[in-house]
Every structure is written in structure tokens, then in C-alpha cells.
Length: 209
Image (cartoon, rainbow, N blue to C red):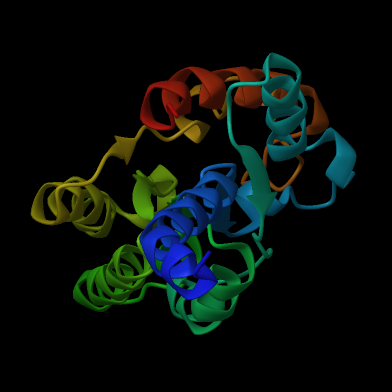
């Protein structure tokens, strides 16, 4: 038997099998890149909403594993700076982008925030992953004019980039004082199970295998 011919005949099949195997690995990952709202400021990581959601989904067995790469205090620019490394390390199929709140709290120009988020979305697409953009809203005490301009960034980007816009869980949490920490900005431990269930409902249709 001519093993060279056998190898030549099977090479395309082996390459396809390898590609499918790689994609299967990638399909298991949902990367979250965000700030303190996802890094769960001052709370135990094991009891955070990303951890609770990951535990729930792994028990169900038909959902991706969640990799939470969020860092408290991160701006969109800081998230962008570490994105390539995360994409290369984890090869996610989906990336939830939960960034911009710290930019808004510091009064950064909405146009600059939009440009940075656009770069993030572009890099995610270039890595053959699917970006999911979370809507962010600032507290009302930051002024209506700026708050409205900031809020409008997200639906405009979702439409422009043709990507899903995930609702902002803080709009549900902030309405209940007992679910908020003393700083008035971050969810308390009591809110984490609710957020996990909320995010499960919103994300599940977007991350079907």
C-alpha cells in the first residue's frame, strides 16, 4: 500500500476534523470583559453573578463555560488594551462587552467612548468571535444631557455593528435599595442570584450551540 497516497487522500478530512475540534473548544467559552459590575466589587468571586451563572449553565450541560475577565475600575480603553491577550488565550466564541461605565463616570466624551467600543467590537469579530454589547446607563445625578448622550452610544453601536444589545441589569437592581452596596453604585451580595438569573434569561438565546 502506498501510504503517501493514503495520507494525501485523508489530509483534507484530517484538516477539517482538526478545525471542527478547535471550534468545539471555542464554542464552550463566553468571555466577559467588563468592570466592577461584572468583577463584583468587594464581594466573594464564588458568589458573584458570573460564577453563579457559570455553575447554573454547567449543570445544564448545553451552555458555554463563562470566563470572567472583568477588572474593577477598568475603562473601555483599558479593556481594549488587554483584549487581544484574552482572545488569544481563551479563543471564545462569544464575548460580552460590559464596559464604558467608568468612562461615563469620569465624563469622557461620548464620541471617544463610542470609538473605543467600536475598536473592541472589531477586534472580537476579527478573532472570529461574536460580540454581545451590554447597555450601560449612568446614575441620574450625572446630568440628563450627558446621561442621554452616553446611553445612546450603545443602541447606536449595536445597530451599526449588527450585534445584540443586552439589557442593563442595574436598571432592575438599583430600584431596590437592599440590593445595593453603601456606595450606591455597586450591587450587593443579595442581588447576585437575581442578576445571574436575569443574565441567564437574556444571554441564553444568544449563545445557543
